[in-house]
Image (cartoon, rainbow, N blue to C red; front, side, top):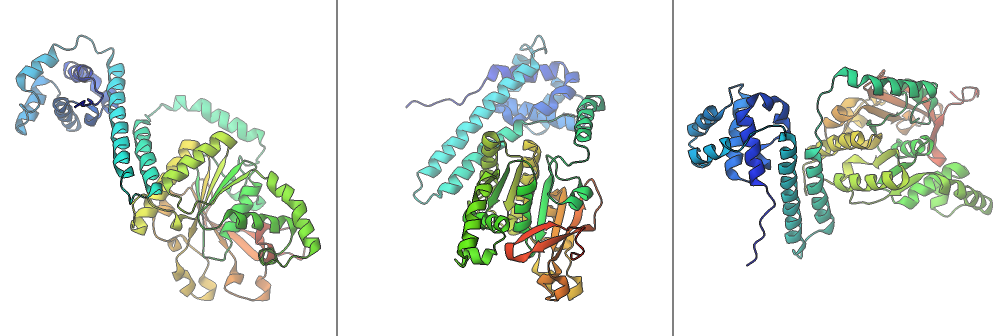
Length: 442
């Protein structure tokens, strides 16, 4: 039988352990880069575990203290005994190559994890009941976790951030107050400064308020290629919403085949304009956080996408089947924020609000943060939370017709609990700025 030995470098592992025992003063510089799990040898894992335990307790670290720590848990012999300790102490003559040695051992560990992920996938793939989507998600999740574990950041002195900060300020001055990524609504841009790379933005509302329409408006106006992940609505319906707006033909007529010749001609004419919009629609109904990251990365690479939109959080799949909603949403929002930072683009996630707000008195149904559905992590992880609100949804009073507002419930770098008035044109399901020069508009 040809048994394959997992990749490892035992001698390099021993060199690392020896360096730490001989020169404990260097541990402060390297402890963040070493985890006992990266060692293939069980002896080396036990010794490194003892070093970490002593370090976390602020105790002296040398051969004697490590041996005593292992002795207290009756693991000296399991860690190789005195013979192995003697081998270690004759192992090192310099610590100059410690960084290189750590990289080698980390690399071997990463390859072992990749092998494990692939073997698990292979075993699952032979199961006749396997779900291909779950299998692919598990493979990508395993590889992604390996990548994320290696993406370590360290504290830097402010002197190192001054240059990038000045460059950022200079670029903002050149824009003359124009946001890096505008929302398409003048007043909202004034109150928020638009969107920025790394932002997680939540647009939340009850059904029928127009959150999908608002997100589409932003995708159209933002000035950068945008990706729209529609978990609920087919891509043709999203296309027809944009055609309805640009042709100024009611959406219900388009969907029900009620357009006349003139309207069809107009729709046909604006379709060229629709086709030129840099919006990429993905209507994968089985979207989970792993496939989202993978698809978004490809769109960024191929089309320079600068904005990601998900419609919507509550029907996005979790990585674990039948996962409790609060846990699932917590996992999703935390990962979305990390992805926004990783790719340095804003990500907009649409979210439902709790039905309970509709039980409040008619004049008290303006949404608030406590109305967010399923998880407090939505409020915690978001950099900005916007509530599109139309009172006419609850009141058919003619004076409310077309009135809408976008409530800024949260933003990390600006005012909150304020709103900007906009217009909602129901027949073509679109939001637009108020024309303050038109006295007929509120």
